[in-house]
Image (cartoon, rainbow, N blue to C red; front, side, top):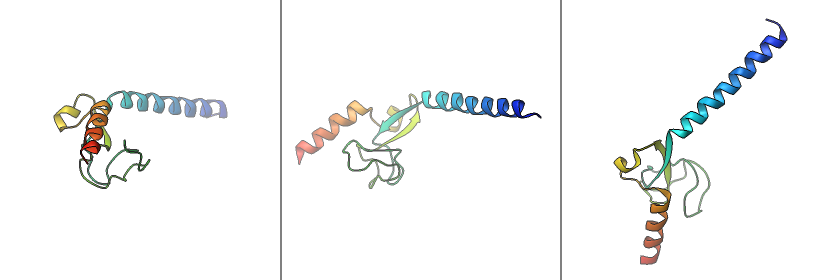
Length: 94
């Protein structure tokens, strides 16, 4: 295979991987309140951490994980707006 063909094949592979990742991201949604300790996907609503895997308790309303679109309610989870509202209510109770 000549260099031009090799580069074209490599570029095609990279582009197709990006398309697959975008399609997978489109089939997921953030679901708050369902992550187990250490299994959250990223930053929490409280802003006390900004990394995946730092949830300290199971089902913390401020922690989220990506789930298949349409399954969050079935898991007992919340949208971001619902989670923010409940977190605010919890803070006001203290």
